[in-house]
Length: 114
Length: 112
Image (cartoon, rainbow over all chains, first blue to last red; front, side, top):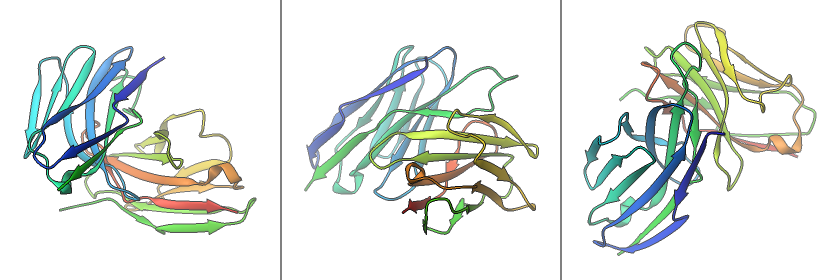
């Protein structure tokens, strides 16, 4: 069964204190791995897509990396406005079959204190 | 910047009633999806829609659910006879290239 596990469940940081969030996955055929940010009561906001091991993507204070078994979301010098739940999702299957539905992890709730 | 919109933002209904949740995907997108998130739980896939037909559905998407694209812009999710356990946030998403999916703000459905 395809599975996505995120850790930690919650993370409290001081402003400026860098850290990493983990997303490990067990899937039959990875087509892509996605990171989303979700604020309370809102829809997931797209951040990154990673397709192959060794790939890295950056956006402001965020950097996502991918290996064959897991992905990391590195947060450098976070600010209070980075506080949110960060969701990892995988897309599996073959081009002739699945139309690309996402399998989500439970998320990591990040709190950044000033 | 184009975005997915959803209406209503909050829907309260009584058990057994029918509800229709509406979505306007991003205009040049071809793939459409519905997901739901029960409070405190994971986002779960319900159904995908492409070329005017359902392309995939999850076990959750049983006979009480249906989707429709009634015109060139709207995409709807109908729940025929709501149950208490249908209370959740329902998210519509759309994709141009089959990869990145962009989500709407969600409709909070409360079944009493």
